[in-house]
Length: 356
Image (cartoon, rainbow, N blue to C red; front, side, top):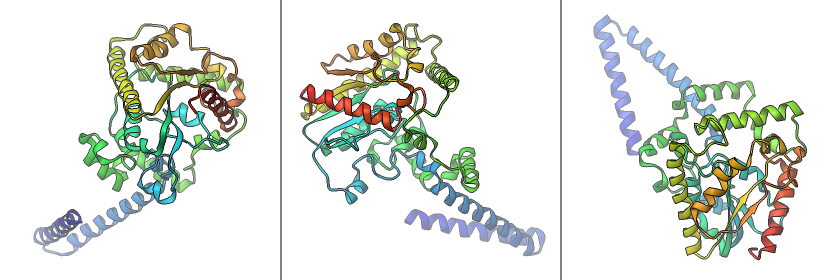
């Protein structure tokens, strides 16, 4: 509050100075009044735009858990009193859409908010592991590029700003996160686009709507194009020319980081008596065509070997059971029906392994 009063005081004094300067320079109060009126109009516009942005799905989507339903933070506990969960899973978008525990008898939580890194996973288990029962299980979802580190920045830090303890925020982004939480218009062009979409009624959660389907809405050609676009996006993101080539120098350095982080996650969990399982989820046949033996060995299996921990692996990538396009809402992510079938299979396999 003290900071707010200081800013308000500076603002008032500044306006008085502007008014006096205009009166001296133009020998009239009118230019000063017009200047302050224009300033008031600009501030009002910014205030209104800011309020619109705060209520937009675009802004909510920048947060890992805007409704406080994914992670058991303080707000979650005000609405829930459950404890002693059997199972949680970590992971990025693939995990978000792969696991649906709503029809399962086990007490489980899907701790994927979408685009989150392995480093974020480590922070999450350190913050929220106490929700698990003694000997509870944690599934670490292995995506095609879990093994490679990526550059992170403000958006990544901001994503977990309202979820994790403030000490988990990268210090160089802390002040920016504080400001952008209150003044999201500082995001610039993306924020302005969010205002326009909100006003035009085009502020929908496209992916979440598609995920609730029970069949694939894409045509044969659209599925092929989607798979090709994903591969192209991955190559660009990780500076890869060919999926079958050995790791680049940059990605070897990234592998070292991810290997250390994975070891830290596993050691942290095992020291506290939890059981850890790797899960490699399936993809549709359209995307799977690109996953050659060399690719999966380089980016998935050799990585797990490098981590060097004796962790059971549930690998659903190689079989044909989940290749059917109608289990997905594009070429990569499972839809609601697919997630239900897949989760049922995973739970059954975990029970067979006496992990649940």
